[in-house]
Length: 292
Ligand SMILES: NC(=O)c1ccc[n+]([C@@H]2O[C@H](COP(=O)([O-])OP(=O)(O)OC[C@H]3O[C@@H](n4cnc5c(N)ncnc54)[C@H](OP(=O)(O)O)[C@@H]3O)[C@@H](O)[C@H]2O)c1
Image (cartoon, rainbow, N blue to C red; front, top):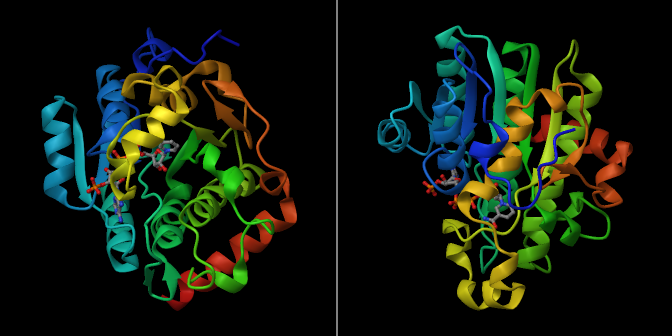
């Protein structure tokens, strides 16, 4: 495998890879790591179906970087919006080289329950679950699902997913609840890896720690980043590298069900390796989605 690591950028990991004719669905394309992923995949010739809360936001990102593609509205906390996005993408009638589930929110200071679910679980997991399950059959034979998880999945509850507290109302802790939603991203990648046919793959990743709008709900984001150590932070270009690597690099064409950090396989938490937990999350998610 190529020797990419902490400092590698999305441009470096995709250098020389020609993506003309390849179509990628990308959530959260309008800012931070998603916008950089859009820019670099576009630079390599890919067509991007960019999803953002509004069509205008997605179109602005495509225009800003001169990337060819389609702008699709997808408010992940609104199942009707996600279902409409699925129909719009399906209507484009294109085989997908990849689905990159990148959008996310982090550490809301107070519990926020929408449709009976904690808003982070609803946005980061359930919204993406509706999207990915609605599009997965459009993946080409070697298509790839990339779930942008987080090292914060290690902060998930002891039980992994606290199915008795999906509203987040009991004993709310911002990092734990965020971690649970990111563990769910990882478990979905694991489950997909076991069920996707052909040469399709599904992997999850931690992008590193990058100063983006993700920290908007934290009281003292700057202080947190100072504590982590500024030398431990990645640039946005470095932060998007593992997503782009997993989406396009030939070295990982046969890698599936794995967790990556800095373009290297990394051991995730014990809960993330629990196949029974992944199965239960999948079944519960289907039940929840059917009820929404
Ligand atoms: N930055 C880090 O240090 C870090 C570390 C670990 C993992 N991650 C993960 O990396 C991913 C990208 O984060 P980022 O750092 O690039 O943050 P960001 O700049 O805040 O970007 C997040 C994107 O998600 C979109 N989004 C949020 N809620 C949404 C919703 N309900 N419906 C549709 N789109 C929604 C945002 O749209 P709006 O701008 O319209 O809100 C934005 O485009 C996230 O999944 C995050 O958990 C980041």
